[in-house]
Image 1: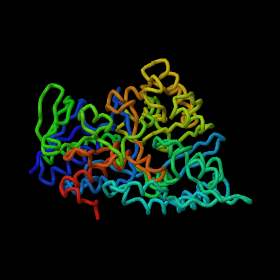
Image 2: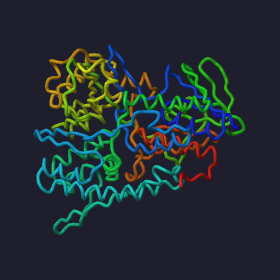
Image 3: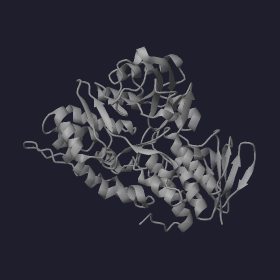
Image 4: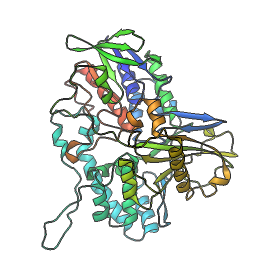
Length: 502
């Protein structure tokens, strides 16, 4: 039985802790914050309950597998997991309104044809077929296996783009999300639909590789799911599963250094000077922070995947409304920006965006409101992280929150009359709560783009030190974080020869 220290209690870190404890190891988790869950935060006031992180779950099979392999109770026995149908409603800048069913290819094609005109659904369906090919080609190396030593082969884009025929000139194929929208979908609203998926994951449609097509494919194939009481309940269930497996937790315990002995990780040092010995250490945060914890150690050298640029963050506005949720209201509505290019530029440079794309979440969940005469609504948009924008400037935060609310009026026309109060969560708040630099949110790993959207592998150059969570392979998102926990556990239990689930 090995002694394993886990730094942080995000979903990837706790997933690895639960799996390692079941394998017979003694696991202790040290978390700088006062509670578990990382980005899966919660805000409560006056009987209203809001998620401050992800609002939906995709690929629930990841957590079904985790709960099946770490205890007797299934995921569904631990949380109220329900499919969201329709999966999303989309309000485009020209006034077009379309609702897309959950995990139904035929239903999506039919809905797009009805709202956007005959042929639109067929073009989107053909695009999803190509996205499926990209998914099939990269699913195992990107999601189910440790990062390959020859990861450079993943720099080639797996998306089978359609050649763009041009008179007397060499054919070209779409290399980015934006080019797929322009050249293959050839319909501004379909292009906006695709762009919104990329931006929601913190990717710039103008530069994100065509392989990002797997993101809408994943969502529309495997569905969108909600946890009753809010997504924070998923973190609560995983925390309780860890406790049942005798994982020890210490909150308010900041790790400031990783100890090294005989060329491998040998424990950690806490901010209060406490030294904790361990046979292995799992780090669940942004690998950029390891530089201060492992002084003099080269964590990434030539040939390694190193942490990339700091990605965008999110601005979240929590609304407490008087009056009940109207019957037939969609759980999720996306209000699209009239200028996606300006919006993307703002998210990646900090420039002024105008009206952003806003996701409006209105769960039909009695556990999130004081009674049926009130409604809890969450608005989210992708923004630049703390740094390019000074999100500690209260006036700036208020102006941006006002713009988000203004956009959301398309989905909730009576919002202003019903508003009791609002609470705003900026990137600076996220940084303070989670420790993520700039409050940024990691995107998932993607093939293509010469590998620049890959994340550092779960093993590091310091033997015995491994990486879990959204900042490590296979990247950000609830499902991906859970996968990273499985990979870390496999590497520690089976050794460096581990090649993933079969």
